Length: 172
Ligand SMILES: Cc1cc2nc3c(=O)[nH]c(=O)nc-3n(C[C@H](O)[C@H](O)[C@H](O)COP(=O)(O)O)c2cc1C
Figure 1 (cartoon, helix red, strand yellow):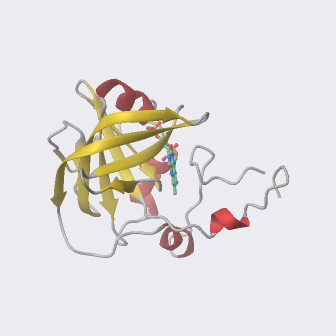
Figure 2 (cartoon, protein in one colour):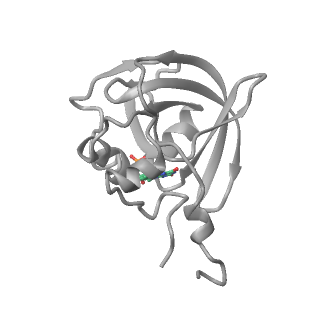
């Protein structure tokens, strides 16, 4: 129980895991998220929820673009570590990493990524600790076939943790 709310229900919600990237001029950054969803089909739109303290938040607010890269089950904790637990303020996550430049200028991660969608932000909502950004999808691509990584697989097989900046974090 946290303030009278039983958080077990949130543990039962299903998610995928994605690297969301953006840029600020020629600076690139990206972070792990479990909160990418398709919100409409005509026109195709996606949304993502980003913590205000994250460098990725700063980049999306400024550039108004982001890319969502869909991870697959071949990923390792070593590969995910910088994206989920380090800030681009302290480390260049794209140094030595294979990536392509998308139509928005956001980097598209090549390794362990099945497909990607790039979006131009059309609106955002302040959620307190986080912002939800909604964008028109203006580019997509498929890199390989495989099994999309789920939040459940991340916890059960990779034994991954959820840090405080994730919307799905359980406060103590
Ligand atoms: C499994 C997992 C899921 C996460 N989901 C989100 C999310 O949906 N939104 C968010 O803002 N942060 C999320 N995070 C936390 C960010 O990935 C993390 O704070 C990252 O270091 C931010 O990097 P940046 O400062 O370079 O943008 C998640 C982390 C993990 C490990």
